[in-house]
Image (cartoon, rainbow, N blue to C red):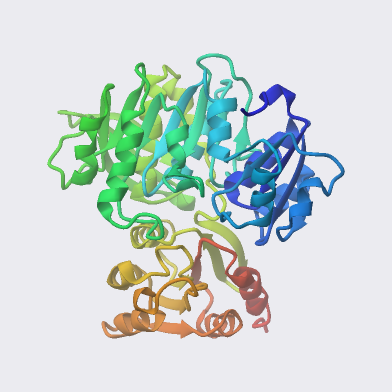
Length: 488
């Protein structure tokens, strides 16, 4: 049995620097709850969030951390990155502590009565859930949200304003597993009322052996939609379109307008136009009509972001929100940290940080940058760091995705010690594939040498897009410093 939420005085979090865990820790502190936590990988932006929130952080995992602050935690929350032999997890499970995963804590402590809007899919979860939460926030609704990133427009990634029945609760629906003792997707715990389902591709090769297992995971989410809910489904992909049969609630479809599924969506994108100052404008059309139903503007570029905004517009419409206010809110949205985030411009070279690591995300991100920065030469810098990108499952796909850039620099994969040699991604092969078709590409043996390579290559007017889902050894601040050294 978990203690009641209103009786929590001290929570200890194992793996506190994960994006979701850190956001949860900061939320607890704002509610006046003492929070301690431990981790072994600490880097911004989450380290900054934790520091400003007042979380007591321990570096490294030790059993004594549970009592290091002088009081016994009422609850120990164990992150999904934590293994079963973790000394703090072992101490909690064997020492009579109440313990749980974060998704289970959400399910049992927060989500029972709220209207839960779960944004799920291989791509677009963070941006779409941030857009939805921002719209509710700007329109003054008592909206709650739990986002697996750091929105630039919202003060927090995790916010609870009201747990009254029917209050919207926006959740980023992660398909990664919950905990070492609970090997099901996190979103299985989120009690969905409304689901926005953006896309479905093979990913997370460390826990999903094949695409069929990914399909089963998302099927489980759709079958869990509560009776008065709905499914908002992107039907660009025929595999995603087929998932509609698993929902026993009304289904509203949307698309880019040119689908391979052969389905005419209820709502689709019309013309997409790049305006001044990087603004993107696009039209929305209804099924069976060529008339423009709505025109929206976004500060974040790319067809994929137009689709994300379309899904949010549909959900807003279904919630009965004022669509003129929704239009204004979407136009104000600045984006999410580490999603096409401008980190600095030195000597005419603009450096961006982006989380893209799946080849589809790489391709869509680079295409979006073309739309927003049409006059700049685009240099892509890639660290294969995710569980999937460190494996060779998408070896050839990356060779196609990075052709969207003008030049590419590839780091060695991050820590392949637990991946069999035959299954490891080859950065050397990717460089060879790219140079073989005339695409400028270089291998970066180390972060230090990579910074030097990119600094020598870049010239005023260039855009350097650094793609990694981790800290990348501080590559971006080092690059900015290196570029400063080229002045004069």
